[in-house]
Length: 285
Image (cartoon, rainbow, N blue to C red; front, side, top):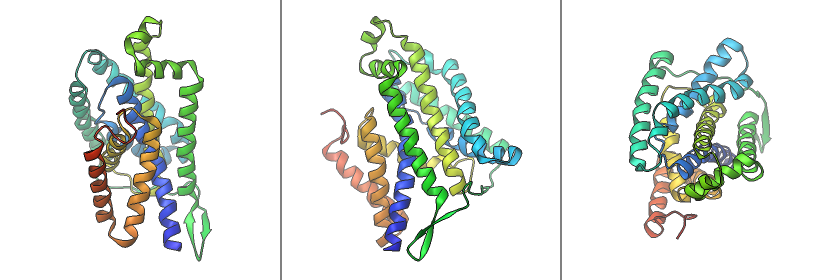
């Protein structure tokens, strides 16, 4: 039962963070039609910035502000230099190729600056929560709750603010939104910045849990795309449910088989779902 308890908590923590990262991917594709292959390196930027923030400023908490701001600046440069000229009227494959190019540019830049060696960050909350005869990391649990709070804040932002309403309107109908006076190009840029910042925040939350490497975003990028595909491109509630569900299935399977095989089986189940419902579970029929 203790093992099951740890697995369930880990599934909640990783599923929440994965949902937050995948939410950024969903927002970007749902509104802009951009298949953002660079989402993983944005996540890695967040993790690497934690290392430098802790090293030079001495506190992990600063990274919660610095990482999304730095990522927003980088994303602003990327968007205005390339993507804003290739959105309306272009195939998503064009944006895919552009973001794929930035995977190499940013990835190699991180390698040159940060280096190939992993570094470890001490947990900001060095407290453990009793769990049976053992304990569970207090920081991990706080990170999972924090990710859900960020997701909840994003949902409130999308539903209760004018900008959020503009984003949702632009997703549903570009031409009508523009005819109603919504500044769609500006909304597009803000959506890109928010989605990119969510990826960096994921890296910030995960950094104290695992080793920080220049390519730490490779694995979560695959998981995030799987989640978005399961949910159906553009489905925000579906993205959250799919992330938590995928993490839970992988975690429970890892009790009886190896973690690698557990993920393989989980992906096989995904393939089976998509065979019968290629538009995703929560996608339009």
